[in-house]
Image (tube, rainbow, N blue to C red; front, side, top):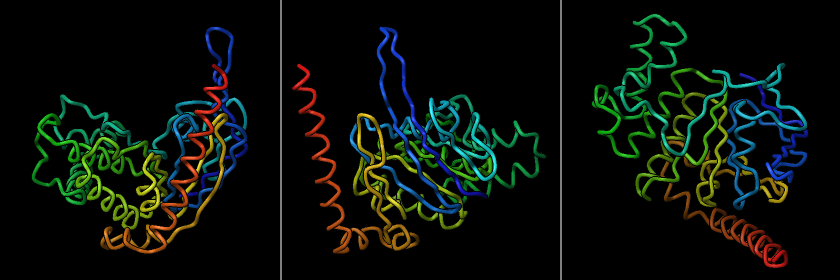
Length: 268
């Protein structure tokens, strides 16, 4: 594994009418190997655009992304993606979904079976190996998506609102699973979320982005991910510092949203 370096990245989308949208402006950030980082900000601040650049789905219009000693030029198995919806193959079983990447890489069948069995046991789905995807709940499907990502053994796991569609109880259980997998695997994890509480729980570092154009506004270093890994997340949420940081960041995001609304009203 290696450090991930975002070096002065900008992104401008050109519209059919000749206009432009400046999605990101001069974003620079170094994420150390093995860190778990959450990215938060109001709608339109470029969070998902940044994640898609890190994944190699988009090429920035300025700057570069480096993983170790090479630049990111496109999708690669060294960077795995977990989407808000599982993006699973509905016609395949749970086992087949998780083993898809290793099969495409030509790994031996016995090795694939061992890997899939281990990962499904890790995410608590050993009894559902032969089930069809449509037979699973939303939370189970996201666990399959996590296992499928890990089966490719990426250096970096990119997560785009992976828990946003889940009910509150399932979401909290999945937050605990994400932290446990981070500690067990030592992978670098970058997670996009709209939830301040989730960003606090799942980020050793929390990056707050500001919009129009998207840029890094504030960075926090936090103890809560380490406290929550293998521990009781509700105890972490009751920590006085957790509550104080939540209110501070909520106020910050609210001010940004009001500023955006003010600009929109002025434009009218």
